[in-house]
Length: 420
Image 1 (cartoon, rainbow, N blue to C red):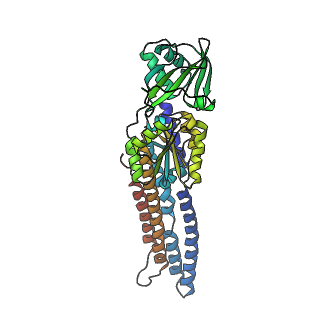
Image 2: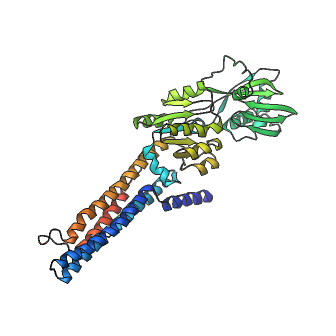
Image 3: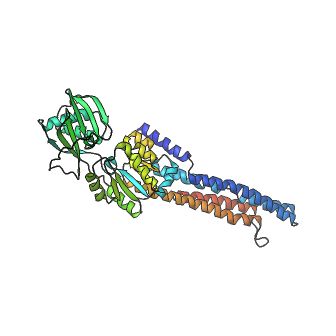
């Protein structure tokens, strides 16, 4: 727990120290305001003294301009919003690692979701075991679990849970191989075992075994168990849609942001989940190394893309996206690659993040507008544009400058996170 808290604190400090695009704009405005104040101050002195005014009066006007135009409000306008927004988001389960990406959330037009572990729970409970050769159900499970024990995938965890529920012994295995986007392979009881999805047959130009009629291909993820090169059985798993996923997609639709499902599952499962959630579309049978390419494809169409995922395989796509969002329950690799981490693994936090990004940007613009507007009005008054009907003293100018800073600070404190 102490390590986790220390990591969170470090992330918050890094985010607060990082300058956003709006901060860079504020710095430029403050720099130019300083030049403007000095120039107008000198010009004011030259005007009043050159038109026959007293030295004391001309100096007083120049000093008033300098004091009134002090860019203090501009100096705190953005950093204060940055500090408050970063702290607020961190205490509410949104860890911002990249300020620029966080600001980009307000421009998002497309959000791509990895299916397993993001929109679904990633539980992958075994639905059924089908034998296709001279093996029992228990033997099919034992052979599959023996190889899968070396994998961190959700499917492996589901098979191992079933093995434990049936109180079956876990056999030893060696020569483990992870077949990217296909499955796993290993040696059990001196037999070559492959546990893989349909991609195994496609990549090796083999005919996919006939699926038994009792298997619902629209909802069940199919894994074939090959023993010695022959398909000995089928293990299907079913994943539950995560609570809040449907609401997330509904709210994204209301915000006119397109949502797409990205999965290695077959088209029937992808279509079923996508349709149930009301998404804009889906990308099925996507191999891990192709996920980044899919994100790049949407960017090439002019879309501003956010990628949400939880696994090692999602890391390249998270890095490629304009905004990479990692689910907190996922792998460390995904979290380290992402721009923003959803600690609670709640898909509704994606909507909250986008909404909060817009609110934060509005606060920044409000503060900038106030700080600039104040100077547009105050500097001419300080220079004596309404003299002799009205004259601004240096003391009043200092009070106005301080008041402007306090208004900017108070406005920043009004920033709140949206409710779920």
